[in-house]
Length: 589
Ligand SMILES: [Ca+2]
Ligand SMILES: [Ca+2]
Image 1 (tube, rainbow, N blue to C red):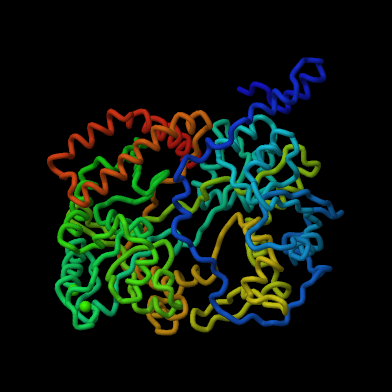
Image 2: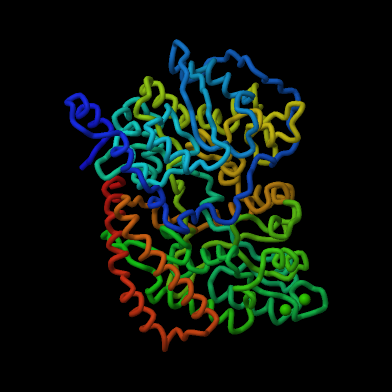
């Protein structure tokens, strides 16, 4: 029920009713509720920017301005050129948006000229003011709006309901069919869609990045483990023997575990049938029964067995003993000294060791571990859906049909590239990758730019602005090539961690399973959830560390742990999660 919506206001004003703008704008007094603390789990641990994969560009590009005059495969969106006002935070790395090649290309090919007004600082405040002052332009990009605020502002009439135009968005509909979790996340409880979240389909970003030391395995004549017990035996051998071969049998740390390297839990939890992935911190694990009932994994027997395993590793010196105090600089230094045997990360081995990517060849990916509790080989996939709304359309746009067609374009094959790399022959060229046997859209590197990557964000495209579908051609190819290809020396040294991850997860018998999806809270739910979630999550984090280090006993203290969670209001928190999950189900089913 809208109290004082903007659309309603026009009617009310016409009828000489008193409803001042200030009072209406006042509805949007807060803006924080959409995204509780720690909500950006997926952005953990630096996905390094890609684009420098295959170094040299052609060096002959000179797409200054004027456009190429090429037509779009999709045809022009507007026969007569129209101008759309665009706002958002200054895209990362951008200096002057008027220099971007796509500005002329979009104008020439699509009939859409963009006029951008980016904010250098304090975007969140600007965004709130923009709504409060009722000055939302045609397009807001890189918006970072929490879904609760998005739906509230949409309902109040500040943003266009894209659902009313969905018949003009066939490419988006196709993407919704492929990723129903995306549609569910952006759909408000009344069925409206006020903003779009990015969908990142790259499997190397969605699968666990967990690696075991190839040289150590070879030195000790050990196989890559496939069960949790075999893993234990390998870690034990790493500890007892001189795995790194430096003459000292005691300087190995079999497993690295630390705040930034908790990703290793993904594979370990999965060995117990638990799919890491929740709706907040990685330590707050939700899953749903077949019948749709949401429960907290952290109180299950399977989770207790996982903690038992972790405690065993800790107690027997098989994991980093400084897990809760060590710094990332210390980790890099230890890693350069060849001290770690097994870890998971959000980046890559070469990143943590501060080496070049060929260093990754010293590692091998690990996935699909089984245990007595979980005999199926599975690989959990994180949700591809972004944590906030990245693009929304102002309700007052004079060109609603053109704007939605323009957005839909970025879900098409040509449009996905137009958003991330620009246009063939203008900003990129297809270069055949002989190793992986596919055509790679390789950015050009015109004079004046230090690298093709710099050209991408300074001279070619609006960095992440229209990346509604985030793809990565090279990484996608790693999941298509014959398995043997992934073992080739050149491939491993060139594509490093991504090749290791693809190989590990493509092993015969492994099936992909979805983690708990990204669900959307209303602002009321988000407000009610915030304190409950923060308190419970903090308690889960603390007790987890205590169970692992042995400060708490997994037998003697377990019932008290479960009871404390009940007292803290776990049932109330789960009721909120259930409500949001039910709405998710109502869209995907
Ligand atoms: Ca050792
Ligand atoms: Ca040693």
